[in-house]
Length: 184
Image (cartoon, rainbow, N blue to C red):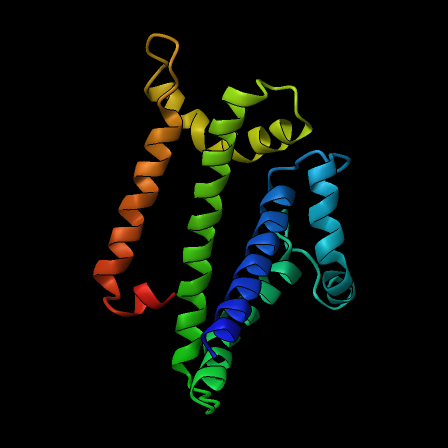
């Protein structure tokens, strides 16, 4: 049962992250013709395409993707409980757990985008098509920090500051929701 639980949890978490990336890419107006952008669209389009006919976007936010990510986050733990214990527990508390799961997944997506962009800057030095998308995604977060804290000795500390803020928010989640935050 642990293998099935791990597989279901991982697949749901990865799809939520891909949906959040789609929302973030539309919000920041990333290059649609980039291969990474095309991958994100192709993975999510079979479900989001029909949903967009029913649920329109609100400004730059793709509400169909956001709604699907929230539904998946809300159904994740009742589904895992069904696999582990054999009981489907539908509780109104799952709505809060779904929201917290979505918030934590957003932080994880931001964390990984910043980390991958930092590593790619050392390896590919701007020659990879993925570099452009990662820059377009992370620049709205890093540019305000760069205005306050300029590069020192050619080293950009803005990525480290964003990651420290993410860690601080993660610890705040642990303080506000002890026990529950670890399960997300």
